[in-house]
Amino acid sequence: VRQRQHRLERWLKGLTVLLALALLLPMHGLWRQRRRVRAALRQFTDHLGSGAWQDAVQSLREDRLGAPSAFYALASGVEGMFGESERRWQALADLAADWYWETDAQHRLSWLAGAAPAVSQFGWDPAALLGKRRDELPFTEPPAQGWQRFHESLSRHEPFRDVEFRSQGAQGDAVTWVSISGRPRFDAQGRFVGYEGVGRDVTERKNAHERLAASEQRWSLMAGLASDWYWETDAEHRMLPLTPALQRRFPDFAERIVGLTRWDAHREGLSAAQWAEHRADLDAHRPFRSLQYEVDAGDGRFLWMSVSGIPRFDGQGRFLGYHGVGRDVTVRKHAERLLMRHNEALQRAVAERTRELEQLNLDLDAFARQLAHELRTPIGHVQGLADLIATRAADRLTEDERQLLELQVAAARNMREVVDALLLLARSTVQAMPMEAVDVSALATQAIAELAPVERVAPVDWQVQPGLQAHAAPAALRLVLANLLGNAAKFTRRTAAPRVSLTGSHDADGRLRVCIQDNGAGFDPALADRLFIAFNRLHSGDEYQGTGIGLTIVQRIVERHGGSVAAHGERGRGARFEFTLQPVARG
Image 1: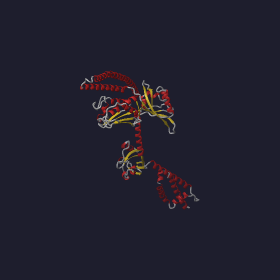
Image 2 (image 1 turned 135 degrees about the vertical axis):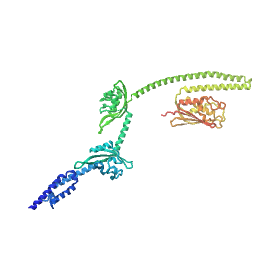
Image 3 (image 1 turned 180 degrees about the vertical axis):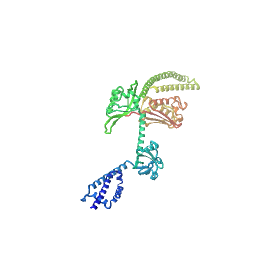
Image 4 (image 1 turned 90 degrees about the horizontal axis):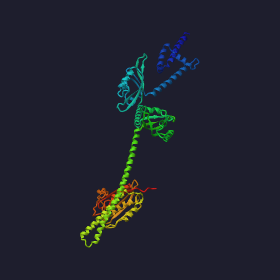
């Protein structure tokens, strides 16, 4: 009996120990050290005598019939529950941070575990980092608040979160950003023993934030330069409170229009039709740009504003209203009005001057006609009287007197040609030029047929390309062809096998380019620009007669057709004249 009583006492003592352990195991610290607790329990129960531990455990595991006891089932459930809790805490630690760290009471690193960038990316030896404070690490730059304020916070044993540091590799090339959070550690007696915490690599987030900040700065700068203010409306197109910048600039105006639509606030700014067109755009949720209207600023000034906007929608696609930017374009509007008035005055001045010039040209044409008429009569008399003397006194005239009369007749004839050329020059400037479709080839053939005969070594071989069409004034174009073809005939009269061709082609702009080429006397190409100056001749009158005005008339007529004329040549090897005309309209 005593032996059983003694064994029962030992069993009760073991049960007491196990119950105490069951109550203490839910504490997280003891749960993590459960193996040590079990070992200590074994040592503690050794003094109870051999078999006490086995008796206690066996009694807790099975009831009297050998089935699992209720206490054993409860202990198994508690162990499973705390095992699941341990897994969750471990997952939280792994997912919330990249590494774990501890420091001693002097804030020197004493423990480092996990993927710290200094070790995983920069290749630093963990042993080289332990025993150093963060400000002693060569790759770490001070946080935003500086080392002093950071250490002051640590000395007060304050927890901290998301303190960011900029770090770089051993070679100074790779740069990362890390964020650490920590809390103070104390021993069982409440003495401070250091900090513990976690760290995260926030380089991507930091770089994204910097890119976003730079982008926002650029957009803000662009918006500030391109506009004066930002505005928003609600779904009913009523103005929401405006930006402080606009409120400071136009206080009365900014306060008055809040809660009103633009067409209600500025009814006189646009016509009813213009406001209706703008409202149709808003109802259709279409963007609009540079809507300009006049507003009453409320301080006696009337301003012009230009606004642009786009619709706003929420995450579900529901229409929220419009937002956009606006500009004060009053100065530009005033400048436009001044410019319009100046242009109108300029147009009136140009029209008046044009009328004066037209009248002056008419007067000059009338004067040229009158002058030609007045000069033709006496010149004709001089030429006629000289011919009469030569006829009636032919027998009595000496050879010298006959030569003098011939010189007089030639001079009179030349004077009459000059007068006629001057009259043509005047007419080429002021005469009407009704344009129509012209067969240039047929007109050239007709001009060749009407050329005056001249003494020449051999007849001209004329080659005219058929089918050339242009939009021109027929009479004026005929004068151009007569001058150019007449010159070609005149300057080839001493050529053994004279040849003159007229060809045409269209340039890139569709204009007809007419080319008249001969193999006659030619000219010095360095003097080509002088050909179109009135009374400027490159050949002496003894060689080739002429007035020196024909090419001037050609240039003025061609330019009045909207074209241009050019001359190319080489002395003794012929000349080539080109001019352009507008093409015949198709369709």
